[in-house]
Length: 136
Image (tube, rainbow, N blue to C red; front, side):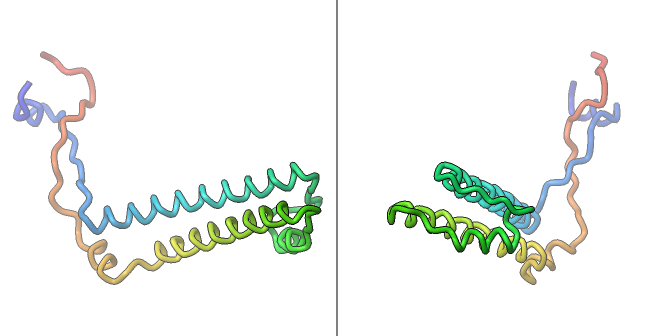
């Protein structure tokens, strides 16, 4: 079936192809999603390390101010363990900082991107997406 026949039959659906500015914003959102996953991974690694060494936080909520105070007070028996612990804590802080920076950038994109995102969408492209069974 030709494209013209599909068009006459109403089988084509309008598709918007994102411009570079919209694609840039999508990249920013993808980076933030990866950063959120990085925070989760870093926290799980720290918690796993603490559990392996018999350390368990009995407070109400993990990653609250009280939990962070508890973390700051942890001292492990062996110096190598303390180094690893501090490295895990630093990894959590770095991941959170990255996530927060990307979140802030999404909230206030650069002026060139804001201008581009406010432009009306134009240039819709027709795509052959079937909406039902086709007759041959």
